[in-house]
Length: 125
Image 1 (cartoon, rainbow, N blue to C red):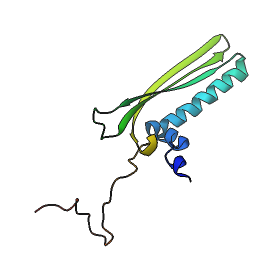
Image 2 (cartoon, rainbow, N blue to C red):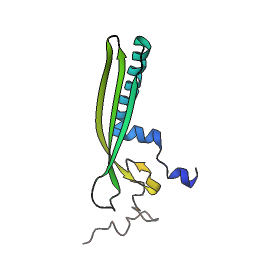
Image 3 (cartoon, rainbow, N blue to C red):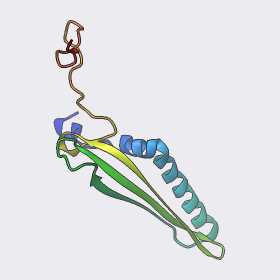
């Protein structure tokens, strides 16, 4: 994997992490419903995924954002159309190059090579 690719957000992982994995299932269900509506009733359907991204705190050192993800869809029915909208939010870390992950990429060194706790972790007595 090249360095540029390692800084890119992994889309399958990203969708799997939104709303604890539930968003991915909601998207699959919406696609299924719209496709069935189009096949069974004719007409056009629509699935819209929207992301609103905002900082979680005013601190630039924290490197965390809140992603509001909205899933909206409309499907044709025998007498018109049916629509639904769902909005949830997931906090994420912003890593090198803007890579989005649910867990921080670099959590620091916890132990020395000898297996002892790092000096920063030792408790003062």
